[in-house]
Length: 206
Length: 206
DNA sequence: TGAAAACTCTACCGGCGGTACAGGAGCGGG
DNA sequence: CCCGCTCCTGTACCGCCGGTAGAGTTTTCA
Image 1 (cartoon, protein in one colour):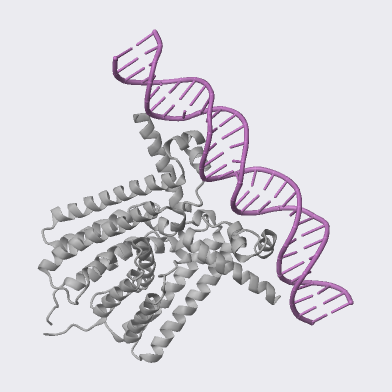
Image 2 (spheres, rainbow over the protein chains, first blue to last red; image 1 turned 90 degrees about the horizontal axis):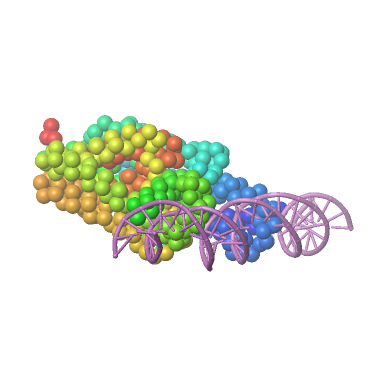
C-alpha cells in the first residue's frame, strides 16, 4: 500500500515535468513508463487513462500551489502587522522565491490545461476554474483587509484587482518562457508590487 | 499558384483554431485534412511535417498580431496628440476590441508554443522569442515618448514596464480561459490602464 | 502464511505522423 | 495543341502510441 503510493508519486513527478515542457498531447505514456522504470500495465494499474492522470496531476499541482501561497503570505503576515506592508512583503518573498529557481519557473499546469481544454472532460475544466477562483478569493481577502485601513488613490473593483495578481503571475510565466529570460517573472511581480504601493500610498503633499 | 495559396490558407485557418483549443500535440493532421476536405498527400504537399506547419502558423499569427497593434495604436495616435493620452486610448481601444469577441480571445499562439517548446526546433523558439522582443520594443517606444513629457511618480525600468503590457495580455488570456469569463481579459487591461494613468498623473495637491 | 496489493508479460487493436511514389486534373505559354 | 508546371489524389506501407484484455508473478503487511 505504501509502495503503491510511492510509485504513483514517481509517475506524477515524471509526468509533471514532461507535461509542463511539452503539454499533455506532446507527452506520451510510453516515455513516462520508460523514465519511471515501470511497465505499461503497471501504469494503467495506477491510472485508468490519460485523463485520470491529468486529473491527479492537476489536483496535486493545485494543492502544492495553495500550500506555497499559504506559507509565503502567512510568513509575511507574521513579520508585518499592517495588511498593506504584509501583502507587499509577500509579493517580495514570492518574487525572491521565483528568482531563486535555477531554471526559471517550470510553468503553470492551470495554464497548460487552458491551452488543451477541448481534450479534457468537464470535471478537469471545472477543477481548473475553481483553482482560479480560489486565487481570486485569496487575494480579494487581502485587498479587503488593506482597504479597511487604506483608501486607494483611485476606485478599483476588488475582484479585478485580485485577479490582477494571477494575471501578472501567469503572464509573467508565459513571457519569461517566450523570452527565455527566467528573471522576467520575478521582475514583473516587483513592477506590480510597485503599482500596488502607489495605489495605496497616501499622496505626498509637496 | 493562386489555388495553392488558397488551400494553404484554408489549412492554416483550420489548424490555428484547432491548435489554440487543443495545443499542437492534441491536434492531429488527420482531423485537419478531414475538416479542410483535402487528402493526406495534399497536406504534405503544402507542409513537409508538423513542425513546418507550426512555423507557418506562428509566422502568420505574429504578422497578424503586429498588424492589429499597428492599427490600434496608430489610430490612437491620430486621435490624441499627447503620448500618454494616446497610449491610454490605445489600451481602451484594445480592451474594447477584445470585449467584442463573441467567444472571448481564442488564445495566443506564442503562449501555446511556450507550453510545447521542447518538441519544436530552435528556429521556432527563436521566432517566438523575437515576437516577445518586438512587443517589448513597441511598448518601450511608447513609454519613452511618454517619459519625454511626463515624469513617473516612481522610478521604473522602461523594459520591465513595456513587458508589463505583454504580461497583462498573456496573463489575462490565461485567466479568462481558466475562469471561462471572456470579460476578464478586457477588464484586466483596463485595470492596467488605470495603473499607468496613476503612474504618470501629476500628484494632486489637496 | 495467506490474501490483497502491486505489479509484469504477452498479445492485440486502431489511430496517427510520416514516407514513398505513381498518377492525374487543370491551366498557362510557346 | 500539347508541354510542363502546379496542385493535388490514391494506395500502400512503417513504427509509435493510447488503450484493452487477461493470465501470471512478486511484494507487502496483517
